[in-house]
Amino acid sequence: MSRNPERNDRKPGKKPVFGAKGPGGPDMPRKGGWNPNPKEKSFADSGPRAPARAKEGADNFVWGRHPVLAALANPARKGMGRLLATEDRAAELERDKLNHGHKIEVIDSQLLERMLPVGAVHQGLAFKVTPLDGVPLDEIADPAEGVIVMLDQLTDPQNVGAIFRSALAFGARGIVVQDRHSPALAGALAKASAGATERLPCARVTNLSRALERLADLGWRAVGLDGSSEETLETALDGRPTVLVMGSEGDGIRRLVAEHCDVLAKIPMPGGFESLNVSNAAAVALYVATQKQGSTK
Image (cartoon, rainbow, N blue to C red; front, side, top):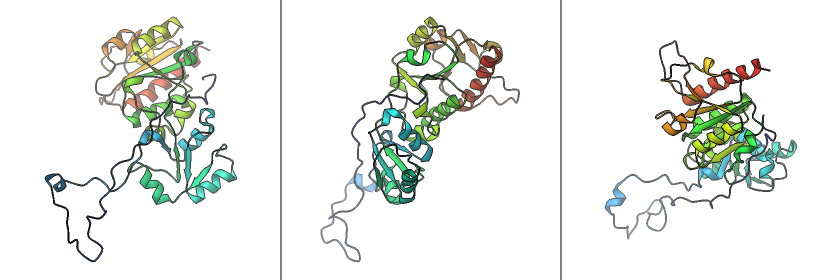
């Protein structure tokens, strides 16, 4: 595990962005009456209306019990953010001292729901924060031991969040992503990770190929997952410090990144249905890798 598993640095965030106001105002008829001066209808008015809810950017929120509690416990968050809680959740936070010094704003559940993306399961808690930026690559890679997960252009928040959760569960040292092609560590991603984004270090690098070169210099061996490879993951892993490289579900690992891997390997699927979700494939790979690591100790 990382020497500091509770740390992820804070990234300067953008100011909250509010959406357009919903229908209403002086051009709408009063209840039970009519409008003597209706607004002239344009072509644009004939289309479907946007939901009548103002939204703040999802990247500015963490919601749900486990993600929020993990964010509150993260030392990098100390004294920052806006903590919103329903009355019962606020009482729980104060009773168990889970707010870690953050001021609690009691809010109605329906009002809280309107502040978050549609479908967000907030469980009575939301934390308005700036997205985490991460740590330097060497912080999770030096000394070389254990397992690191590298994600090559995975953009789906649910998949990335689930991989964070599995990586933390299996004791990975950290996650490496490309800064320009990865989602912010907040919103739906943080929810899917169940708080793992606050505890597992993440390095955001400019170039994955150069990052693999640096990792090789530090003593790491890169194993890329590729369903078309002839070699299986079990034979490819040997217990040395390992970087598991995962590609996107559509395109897989990009050519230059694959060329910087020491070996490409597949997860054998005797059932004949070779279509594991990338987060499930990551969980399987992490399990096999940690088993190999344990067999060399």
